[in-house]
Length: 174
Image (cartoon, rainbow, N blue to C red; front, side, top):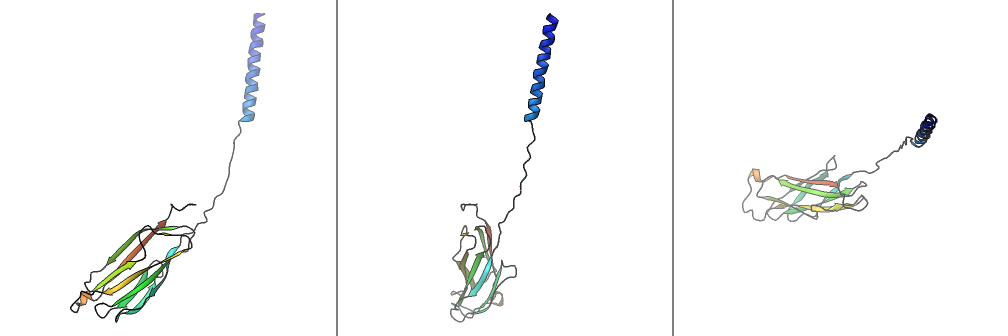
């Protein structure tokens, strides 16, 4: 009789294990999730235009153009006497869909005691919203303190101004 109880107990335990195995198999299924994502944003910060202003004194504009890369501008100015100056207005456009922050301004010129450059209307950390434009000015000036005719080396000066924009991540919605 004892053997019969043991066999029934073992059979019952095997039946329970079998039911548990079938139950586990029924609930243990593999879940597959598939998806697709597309980025539709566009980065397009560029110089839209450069315009020469009204000359002061006997200064004159020879040319003012936006480079073919749309990230550079070239302007040539003739300065005749101390006090002559010409201010250029540069328009920067954010034609993209992301806000842009001006992360750095690099302003270098070749040395000349007779020619000075300055800029106004733009500063580091300015944010240019998507679709917006901003303007700033660059002034080329014959130095007022020059009292004698400059040497040939001092008659020409080159300005290299670099505006570095990055995506602005502080604006809400980004």
